[in-house]
Amino acid sequence: MECCPIPESSWDRALRLIGRHDEIGLACHVNPDGDALGSMLAVAFVLRSMGKRVVASFGDRHFAVPRLLGFLPGQEMLVPPEQFPAAPDLMIVFDCSTFERVGLLGANAASAREVIVVDHHPSNTGFGTLDLIDATAAATAMLAEQLVYRLGGRLDRDIATCLYAGLVTDTGSFRYSSVTPAVHQMAARLVATGLRTDEIARELWDRSPFGYLKVLAHALERVTLEGSLVWTYVSRVDRAAYGLPYSELEGIIDIVRRADEAEVAVVLKEDDHGDWQVSTRSKGTVDVAAVCAALGGGGHHNAAGYTSYDTVEETMAKFRRELRRVS
Ligand code: AMP
Ligand code: MN
Ligand code: MN
Image 1 (cartoon, rainbow, N blue to C red):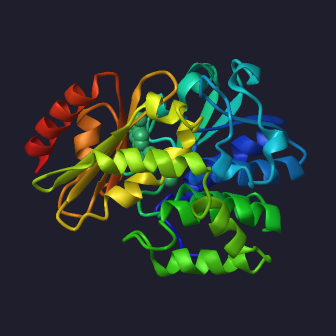
Image 2 (image 1 turned 45 degrees about the horizontal axis):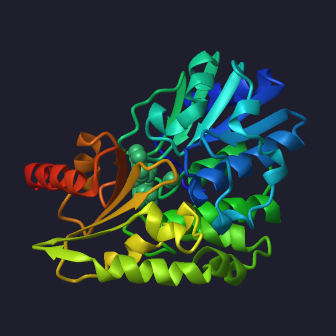
């Protein structure tokens, strides 16, 4: 295992904190992706095998595991946020760059005695009482793997499935610039447990309800190229016509960002509450994390996001303004 910039003293403190507590609350960011949920569940498995009482959750108003991640093992350890301890002695938070990303469980984190933040976002604000943050890691799952070993755990197929989901989603199937030899070495350790990586890939990327094709068609029909910006949106109404859940929209940005002419791609996705979740991607020259941070979100240099409470037009006007400022 390659060493990381998290100081040994921080890992030691984390192990001491975990050792001292029998009940531990785990949380990951709202609208969880493979890295958030996978990292959390992998650590949950190990803590449970150590005899800890573990609850794991995420702070969405409508608590539901996205269909895409339905194959992840360990979901019996999940509880909805209202069943999460109000003031846990120890809480561990995964893949959250800011306190806001903890969503409804932010109140629990604020009341917790100790909060360990495990994350890889360069923009992480360091909101834990102990921060295990490595911005060079391609996924939080890389830090979760270390935590598994340091807790004395071993990879079994369940843990490896969870960690692989994190690694493969956050690296875009090993395509992004974050991919290092350490990423492939980790993948090799995971695959060696007997993972069916073909089945995982199919679950994550190669299937959708039929309605997805129709909604995608709408989104592509109105896709717009403005100089080096390509963008589109998907409204609640678009989805309602086909009963398509919000979480099915994740892959649209990967299609929109294909446009060679564009340096920056944006997809506005209206969630079930009428708020716009904005996905942004850059090909390298523009730091979309800086743009999104200025608009209340965050992320990585080439992949970032934020929530907008404005209309599509207002959202794009503000985005263009920030984009001009940053470029
Ligand atoms: P997505 O476009 O949802 O795949 O998100 C891309 C990146 O942006 C991820 O690394 C997220 O952590 C970050 N991100 C997305 N939405 C938000 C948000 N509302 N606030 C902060 N960061 C976000
Ligand atoms: Mn994430
Ligand atoms: Mn991540």
